[in-house]
Image (cartoon, rainbow, N blue to C red; front, top):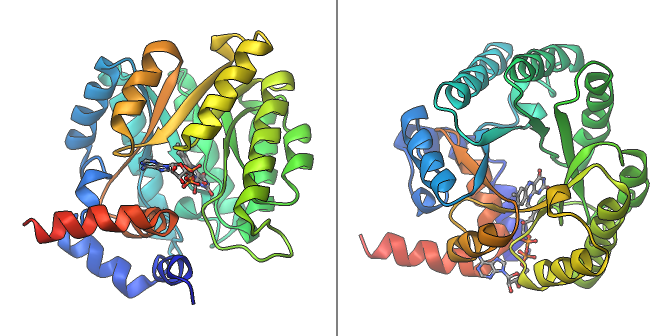
Amino acid sequence: MALRDILLTLSKNEMMNTAAQKYGLRLGAQSVIAGTNLEEMIGNVKKLNAAGIEATIDHLGEFVYDEAIASRAKEDILKVIDAIHAHQLNAHISVKPSQVGLDIDIDFCYDNLREIVEYASDYGIFVNLDMEDYPRLQPTLDMLEELNKVFDNVGTVIQAYLLRSKEDIEKFADYRLRIVKGAYQESEEVAYQDKLDIDINFLELIEYHLLHGKFTSVATHDHNIINHIKRFAADHNISHEKFEFQMLYGFRSDLQKELAKEYKFCTYVPFGKDWYGYYMRRLAERPQNINLVTKQVFNK
Ligand code: FDA
């Protein structure tokens, strides 16, 4: 089994997740998680805003199988929306449907999402439905379409490793979309396995949405992709108001600040006690991330 597969399997380990919640930010997670509570997150978002960077805030949590926990997660997200409004943060919300009940019952999940989107809508705040693994994709898109019948402040994510993404990007052209390579372990029946194929599809999807779509969030740390898109946008006279670059909190922070001087830029800001699954996926993405962690652990 490759290291990436081991880490992705570990990312879903419930026992490890429970232990991680109990012991606070560990294993180097503090450099990529913006705190475990609301106050710490607000302080970090204010710093980003001061550098001209917007934030998309993820109150961490996923794969919830208990209604009470999912309802509490929804309430916590409403508090984040209140905080964005009260502190006048330049920020919006990212939410994983499995955190608010997708694995329990789709109607229950939809009601929770609807409440979040409606609450955010009253403040003019956007809500992004993060895209999780393949079995959760179609239900997420179905809920998005339902929400979009009533609200215009909701969008989602298109994953370039999926074979079906070309069809999805055409269908959802009228939506604000974040386009990513894709972070989960998927089979060859549904996803490209080769890095080059994923990169080619990633560029094609971004270019399509820049030309035909509503608003594009180009979410990557890959400077080759970023440089290509900068050139593409300039060559096709794409307005800087129609797209932004996004990166995750704590990754390539200097490049984030540099890009923010010229382009719209948004940092994905995860915070909260439930950091383990998110963090393990980040380790799986890049072996260098593990070196970073090892250094931090042994420097203590
Ligand atoms: P990738 O990891 O493929 O790296 C490509 C190259 O970029 C590397 O070889 C290196 O040269 C350079 N590079 C990358 N990271 C670097 C670093 N830290 N320092 C220096 N060089 C670096 N996924 C998902 O399935 N659903 C979702 O909803 C989201 N949401 C999301 C939001 C945001 C804002 C981001 C940035 C990402 C996501 N993702 C996601 C994760 C995404 O699918 C993907 O797994 C990661 O972004 C990793 O892929 P990259 O495109 O960043 O480059």
